[in-house]
Image 1 (tube, rainbow, N blue to C red):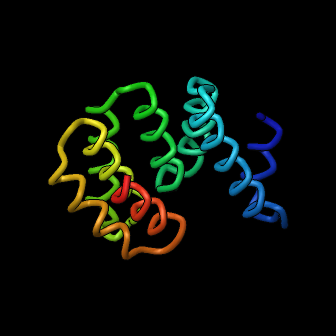
Image 2 (spheres, helix red, strand yellow):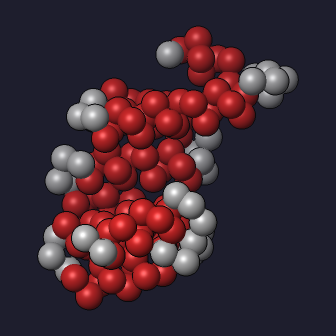
Length: 131
């Protein structure tokens, strides 16, 4: 892991964008699969190097959401939206969080907004709205 972070910190590395994307995918898979602690560590490592990497912030919020740390996840997602009001990933996750916590009307507002966004967030929101 440390070696990968060294490689992606090198701005001259031709594989840098691909490696960052791969690490984000690994973290998201880990959070979904119950490997929450390693996923959090991965997202935090990425954020230590790139504090404004919103995908890593969303991943960290997701890792909180899957272990029912709803308040922390919600605060993180709202902080993302304060910086990036059109971040459909944060909007979609806020909709899922609201749905999970029984706030149906709020969930519908977020999910309807996210459903207008790009994939995969638009599709995720549409599925959540219909479930």
